Length: 354
Image (cartoon, rainbow, N blue to C red; front, side, top):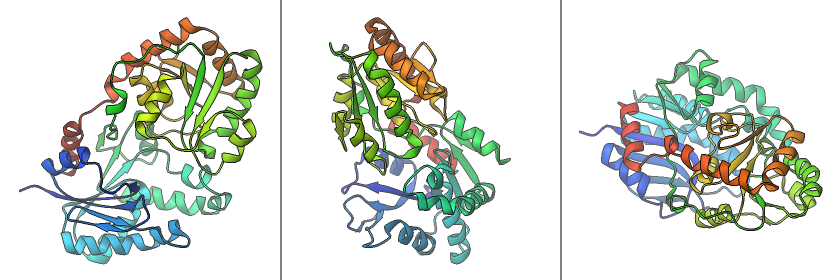
């Protein structure tokens, strides 16, 4: 008999949910997923319970209701394990287990530095929750039955708490639009940023670096893809900007670029880095979080410690086609360790639950 697992996270799923990942998981486990709905409307079937969007204070409503929602599903489903997307969902699941009195094991995944969600994301008011958030997350990680990390960086964060990860493997990424043969570099040099426009992505640092670099490479350009609370920085910068693109459109945007730029202050497991690698594009990134785990200096990209170094790296790559091509070839060769099929990912999750 398959083990039963309840997957809990605040991920916003489009409805109907794309099947590849979950068909593979269903082949290994009896799964149910508690998440949120991308269209704001609640959805429910035999596998998914997607929560609708609250009219007011959607985030607060979700987190306050989460322990009760998980407790209800624990009583209904009697799963062997609850797999939680972050330490905050893990804290809710641990409380729900006490409320429901159901002996399900709690597995907490660590996809990034949990401290950034209150300090470098969203409105400044979140910072008031930093101390409480840190304690809740650390307590959940220490009390969980197992912790899974996704990169050497996230594993190091967990070990700082005295917890040894039970497993370390990447999150599943649907990379089908990115894995076809790379296109050659276009004629016009262009740097591309793709990510949420939040403080942890160092959007302000990117703006400062581009203002420094642009006069030195007048033939080059910067394109930004993303949305968030720092959109004002992008508006003031006045570069080409798309708030949102589909995966296929992101792949085409990478094809139109010479290099991806990712100057994050923190990065758990940069999916867009792997997407750029698959498209044969090198990366200019910060020495923060998991970026140095993926980007090898001078081989698949260039790394920077400051905004000034970031500007210098942009000038180097955007003024040297041969360098951009060499970094792109190195990036393409570096993609392999971060790729996995749905079946490989599902097998790893089943082994973790077991």
